[in-house]
Image (tube, rainbow, N blue to C red):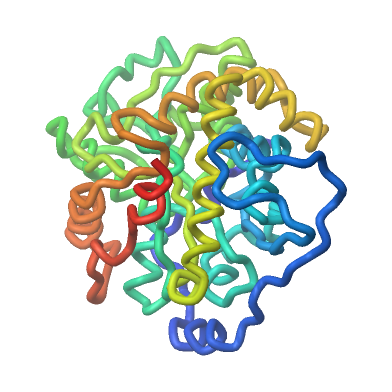
Length: 354
């Protein structure tokens, strides 16, 4: 069975905005916890010295731990969070669809989510903000097998395309097809849930959409097949941030200095992971022994360049990415209601961490 990172990518969150806003006002603030004994001194570049107590904060992960989380693991392992006075817990939610809910209500201080979902949440009045882009480009893709004759979107005409049943994936596929002179009506969509790799390898379908080209493609290769990958942003879909780090508006108002410390330490963790991919995967496997090492070793090699590709510092976000993607979502009927994309993100903290 293929794990589904992307279960939380969906067309509508179905969240009750006013209830979350009310809950945010009542949520308890993170508390300080005793620090474990450590050597004296701070890491180079840290702005806050080690103290006798650490503030406890938590991060809700987007799914089970994988290579994209290694920067957070490195920041914790190498003392970057501790050096800025934070005790950071990484949590896998019982239901990954709840990440924005958990952050909005203050149950988790930070969370990893999707640009798509942040825009949808804000349209519903959910007060969450992206404070850093974790992956600078989409990971979602159309995937087929070599020898299928599929090398571009219009080759899908007359074919069966498996997908998880998400309207957002339908919109991505429709855009790619139209960009290449075809239409969504030209293909047969097959809802295979999140069994994308199994459906493709068994030839139940001719191609799939919803697969990460840094993950599912490797699973396919491990089965002796060679995937054909069509990246969505190369076929008419506006470039967007696959994964972002979010926090609540209340956290920004009440604890901006704590957010700054978190972002500064997080950036150092991702810099460490990018500088030593082997050590990053070693740490992931050590903390989570069920990790597929071979998968993550190859996956991080493909993923790590996307952490900083084309940006001056890890986490940077461009306003045009947010406005263009929001306009695309609205044009495709995915985003309803009023939302200002420029309020959905901030570079304030990554800028100050330079």
